[in-house]
Image (cartoon, rainbow, N blue to C red; front, side, top):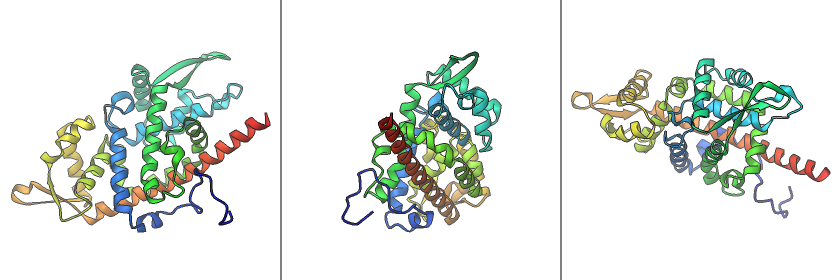
Length: 305
């Protein structure tokens, strides 16, 4: 685009972002803080769909429910958002068993996040239809992913995601499936974090610990300092204790002081989580571009019609 031509407000950065560029950005420490703060809001058990603690299996299931429904075409059986299709799609990620999905879907129906509707052309089939309650949470979740990117790259920024634009949400959901393979590869490339992704609220708890310590390995904390996290993410203190022990076992945390009551981050934890955040932001950038393209194509189709 010529330098003298102003870009539309929703135009993304000129070139796709890389994790290396994000990590090298001088404002990355502040972006990390924003990333963690925004995700703490959407993963709080008071607002997380189903009122469960979050893990990658449930988060993936929610995202795919929204994506499948956005791609639903009544005349095309292959697009019908059924429980079987949900299980098949989620299985690609390797984090949620069929039983977990059955339990979670039943809970989402109970809490009013999901409705099972008859397929008009085959009354034996039930479609998974997200309610406005779930779609509203999904918009908040989407916005949370772009808050840190918006801080790092405010011009032109990512306004359609940050504004919770419903039309962009639909376009984003329709196109996000195209990015699934890359997202799966990204998750499994961060092997140090796989256990914490799959354990209830473990990822957000360790991110909160990282934030509390200011990513400074010289800072200490005690287990008792994390009591508020147990309440926020609907887990027990013993669960937090187990998360800390697992983090210590792989070298993310150390213990010191009288009776080993002081916990300390290691550079390995900071590096692993910073890389995960940067990789996540790269894929958010990718799906934003896909969403913009889908939105433009939808607009062109409407005009043509």
